[in-house]
Amino acid sequence: MPEATSRPIGVAIVAVLAFVSGVIDIITGILLIFQGDDPDVTDAFGGSGGLLAAAIGSMVLGLIVVILSFGLWLGRWIARMIVTVLQILSLIGSLFMAVAYLGDPVGEWASVLVTAIVVILLWTRPASAYFRGSEAASR
Image (cartoon, rainbow, N blue to C red):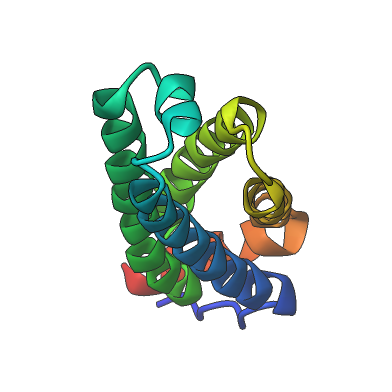
């Protein structure tokens, strides 16, 4: 049976950053719900239904990323693929909210930065070797 590759520091950082990114998405969704009384914010999302959908979508996406961050820690390739797709969706959503939001979008820009770092680090050469080695060892 092949031996698992030891977890490189980059993968550990990715797992932690994915966790942080998911938590930021959850907090953003919660904060967005509390701004439903602001007509400028509601109008930016096309009404209260759009605002609620964006808030719930952000929270659900964040929860999924938090759960999958543990799969990244364990070197599961499926977690890597799903997190990559979800992080790209999160990046798009955060960019939209940063541009559409009329207040102070610092949280959204922070989410964009963290998400971009997660995706980049997830596909480095040491990370790829770790995911290949972990999957080979689990067979």
